[in-house]
Amino acid sequence: MAWTPAGEAVNSARLAEYYKLPGAYLNKQLQALVRAGVMTSVSGPRGGFLLARRPENITVLDVVLALEGPEPAFRCEGILGNSPEADTEMNFVRSCLISQTMRQAELVWRQALARQTIAGIADSMERRFPEDRQKALDFLAADAG
Image (cartoon, rainbow, N blue to C red; front, side, top):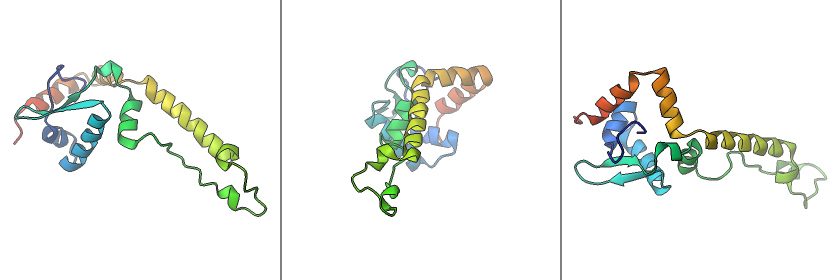
């Protein structure tokens, strides 16, 4: 969608067909992106979805948070508290070395995603596969059916 002209909506059915995804699944994901302010939906015969901001202002982290939510990927269950003679007052989320390692890894992962923009991915794709941009635009612009 970073390749589509500004203000031009992409039909979700065409997008689902292009990526061979179930339409209902893709629509659910697109609606989550709309709720997060990453995309905008347009109703009507020429409706569909478009980026709500310029591609260089949308990070991969924005997309991940919109689709997966802000909660950490790793959730410490505090199983160390179940060990014999465990200190019930201890915060195992903070003291567990596994939890600390996972939180540190997630921070690095999120920082990497925050540095990568949708525009950067589109530019890399175009350099690596120069013919794909026009193929995608032609497919998405064609009448569905």
